[in-house]
View 1 (tube, rainbow, N blue to C red):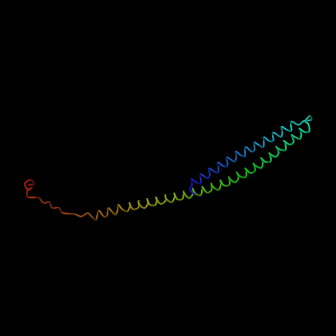
View 2: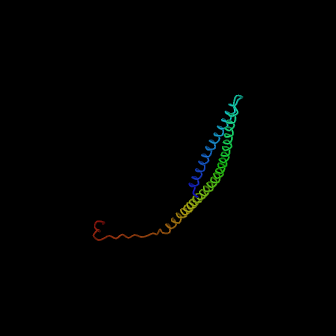
Length: 158
């Protein structure tokens, strides 16, 4: 996989964890709301409350307790999803690090190849001037020159 696709997958997983965390918070708030309802109902019961009202309030409390249990189950499910996503995130991060290491190795090999090529060129340049100087020395020959004049120019020269 390419680094950009891995990074995209990582961002997607992180946003999914954030979404699940918000959902977990909402479920926690629901549970707190149900607990407050139960406390409110329990406080409203006194010695003047009739049996039918007590039974009605008990049904409300039982209903809220069921909602609390359902909310806790949802919270557990969400926590499990979050944990799975975090495990997946760590795997993707590991994969990203491996891909970055591969890219770094390729880059390092290219740099080393360029450096080696430059060294070879420098060595060739060092050897090349001395060979050129030797060739120039060997090529220097003395020549005798003879300049001939045309007869028409003879009067002008003499």
